[in-house]
Length: 438
Image (cartoon, rainbow, N blue to C red; front, side, top):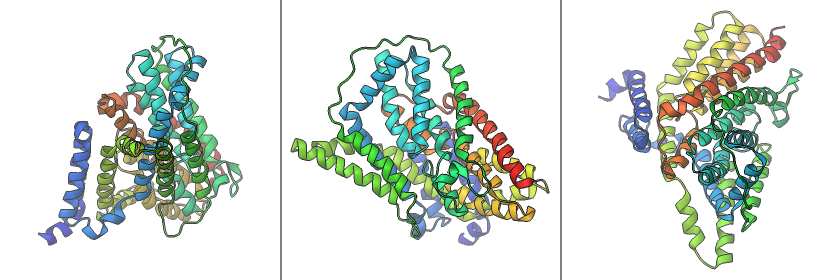
């Protein structure tokens, strides 16, 4: 039996992987169970050896999510999201512009803070507004999630894929604003242009949300310390991006969990009670954490079986002898692939492929690198399970009694993604394609 599995590992993996994602999309209420069961199947079959399970997990991501959830719960309890909601209500004439403002706000934050952390911080503000107006928060949370995911490619600290690219290509924080090697504007400004174009689409989606917003008395903030924790997290995450980490210690996760512990400890001391500990732990979305835990094992399994590598080689052969054709394939194939699998192992696999392809043409690989980054980062917006930010957003909606199907999510996410990727594709080709080709 083991010999049969070893000889047909890639086909068995493909079948299990396809079934897993069909079930994840069609049975949204059972996503956590499906992911964990699929992971268990890969382990039982030996495709993912039990001894390697620990290393397949992106502990940095899980710790960041858990820590941020805890910090955000403290921020919510402090009343800060309610105050922000009141300020936005004062400054915007109707629901449409309030949602757009929140989407742009989440995008701005997400350029410097993990996408999931951004969703966890901004979504409560949208929930407060929607509760005040007695309307469904589904579209608002979806818009916030996909907007935050879009901006992940803007800076070195915006997304894990950006960190991977910077490490592989030797890019520093400032290279994302001005690429010194080619003397060209950085990916930050290209992403912002894509964000503006995609936001125009959101204006169309929310065109009928014209209900006026009546400002009332501003909510009071009980405690500013949790807000200080959020700001400290932002600063520490940026600083950590400049510190070499050859041993891949989950520094960002440790920062987030550490600040959560500090916040809970301060609250417990102030109240002379362990109630803040229980309340904070209760607010952590363990279903989302377990879902990601299972998906990391699933993705690690398909990477180990060679499925991702096989897809990469197909892209390499299909590009032929055209630089523009290969660039186009990298971008759009990355969009499609990242819509269904975690983009971290995919980007890790494709970076050497992009470098090799560039070497065959004797050109700077930055064109292929940025094409890969934009396609793999933005592609996750196509489906509810394509990005951790989307999963976190849907988890927040689920906790508030709203189950969102794939169709409802994709009615907003698909046009948003295609517009953003299209603009990014064109601008990268203009600013980097002409530079490296000419």
